[in-house]
Length: 329
Image (tube, rainbow, N blue to C red; front, side, top):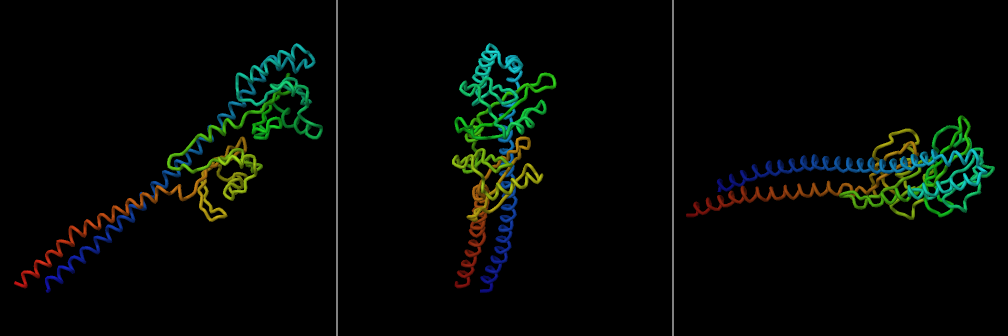
């Protein structure tokens, strides 16, 4: 009898520390593994935001350089110096249309004088109109004509087609005097199409948004019905306030929405355009891999515990039975 009690006590004394040790190993391994997965996911989100922001900036920069190059054509300067010459107007119109067809990024591109009188345009029915009225002409001149610098007015709705376009202007000088300018509307949906085709491994339900930080307008949203509407998303509004106040232009932010769903945002502010690019996903999906790691480790611990019981406790029980048999003989 005493031998049986001793065997049982021995089994318990060995089992309890062993099980606790295995549990401690699980807790520590789960913590460190989860931390690694967590940092990897955040790093991936940050890298994605950075690369997408670079795509946007590259596209806009290409469009700006294309407009500047257009302004260097001899037909532009010659027409602006002699706007009433029909032969020069014809040559400049051909140059305008040909340049646009070659680049394929412009919804419209044109040449205009300092009164915003359109002299050439890819849509010939626009030739002859004035793009600015008396209420805005002075502001436009003071903004666009003051120095040899491109003015990017950001995304707007094209009055002719209803498409989202990026509006740009570049002045043309003769010496120190501005003699006119070139303007264009660049297709914004080409950038959006590139963004829409991109996916992130392990985050299939993540969403991109591109916001004008000045107006809060959605330039792009994976939910197309929200494009060109003002954001009311609490997380986006907080990030707009952050970048406006001069806080970090790249980073992460987490919050709960009105439905008490937690989200993680990774963002990058394109300062020279005033645009805020955001990658958004729910914590549930972002940390799904973390939960998977914990589950796998938990199952491993359970297997180890069962194995321990089978290897240790079971032999002890057999030993107990053997002692009983010997005693009964």
